[in-house]
Amino acid sequence: ELDKIAIAILATPNSRWEIGGYTDNRGVPAANQRLSQQRAQTVMQYLVRKTVPAASLTAVGYGSQRPAAPNTRAAGRAQNRRVEIKRIQ
Image (cartoon, rainbow, N blue to C red; front, side, top):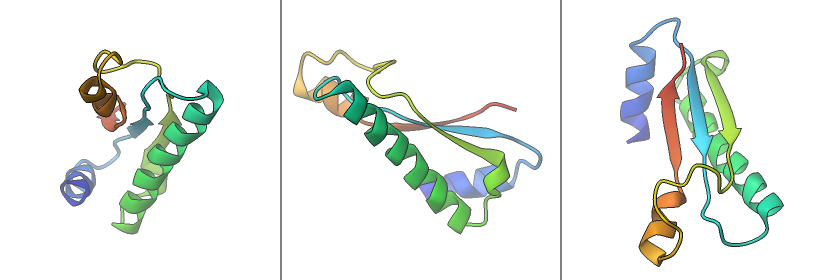
């Protein structure tokens, strides 16, 4: 999937992209914040290795903010442990 994303980004010159990392709500909030930032940065590093210009990417860790699903069940928590990429310019 990341290879396809790299191709799409490269096909959109002068664009800017945010890579957002997320966690579920379990654990210590500060640790979740660090983990989400690491997730986003790992994806960013991969895309840069695929020749995506680093200047076009921003990695942001959101921790357990902005859940995609309720954290009340394992399936919901699994959905919240994710990375999203969106165009910001």
